Amino acid sequence: MNGDYRPTPQDKFSFGLWTVGNPGRDPFGGPTRPSIPPHRLVRLLGEEGAYGVNFHDNDLIPIDATPRERARILTDFRQAMADYNVCVPMATTNLFSEPVFKDGAFTSHDADVRAYALQKTMRAIDLGVELGARVYVFWGGREGAEVDAAKDASEAIKRMRECLNFLIGYVKDNGYDLKFALEAKPNEPRGDIYFATTGAMLAFTYTLDDPEMVGVNPELAHEHMAGLNFYHAVAQAWEAGKLFHIDLNDQKPNRFDQDLRFGSEGLKAAFFLVKFLEDVGYSGPRHFDAHAYRTEDEEGVRDFAAGCMRTYLILKEKARRFAEDPEIREILAELRERGSLVPAADLRNYTPETARNILDAPLDRHRLARRKLRHERLDQLTVDLLLGVR
Ligand code: GCO
Ligand code: MN
Ligand code: MN
Image 1: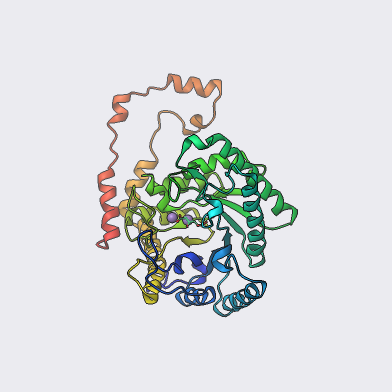
Image 2: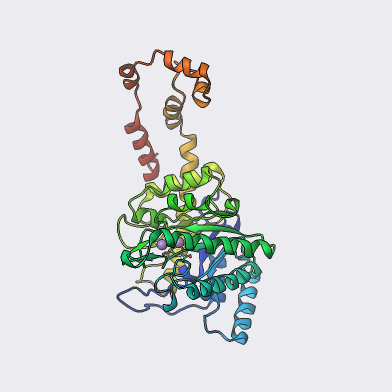
């Protein structure tokens, strides 16, 4: 670990064009800083030490671009990728900005709208693959409802499945080396969005034609909007072999989607997340789906991007110290290796004999309840470590 926490491409940090390119617009006011064209964003990211840039089709190519404009944008973009050593690990489709998607894309009642969403996505997949993407994200921003009388939620789920199965077919037929990562969000822009949590998305993946090809893209802000524990959601996705991508940012709980700089709000939650990713050896991109405060100019956008990566690297170093801390190790060893009244192997495997062993074991609930856990001490050691006094 370098002492100054400077990111390198080996750290696999990525940003979306829509993140560093966000001009500070919000529902109550217009942009506060000029838009930066894609090739200049690639330069900014390369200079700050990121390895990857991700995009929605229309972040890169405006929806009404002429073939000539498209070609010029792509030439400049590729040139910047080569000049600044930045790759495209992930791509996605904008299925939320255009009025045609006002009542959903893949879940729309209107078969023509669904066909348009498929057409737009197939073209966007071609573009993403052409630029090197290996992961394709599906975030169904408009796949929800305000008026439940208007839509049968189970029908919507079936339509979503049909469209994803169609696209699985498309990817395979073209021989693309591409995996899908489904991103959940509880609400915003819809009053309610279907598949509100990462857990709901995970369950849905197993109902698709090729579950192996489909995983999840959990986002910190989205789980925290729902008041949930992001690290737990990520751990479940990892344990299922379905953590194909991750959206890192920050968020005050139970509010609108803030997409704040990583680590700017909940340092402890960010710490346990980084510790988990590093401990298990997650090797995918660390993607920051966040944007600079509306108060910032281009220099502030650089501060924002550098801050996301710096905080990640500091927390990674803290995770290393956590693992090496003698007192933390001692408490964890005590906590994790307990229980001797029944062989632990018996608990993993039902047989008539193991059942008999457990039924006969002298398990006294009062004695078991008296065992010390030392959580107060362990948590304070973690806090001391994070506050830099340990
Ligand atoms: C949000 C979402 C989006 C998606 C992105 C990729 O902030 O509401 O996270 O940023 O991740 O559109 O499809
Ligand atoms: Mn978000
Ligand atoms: Mn996201």
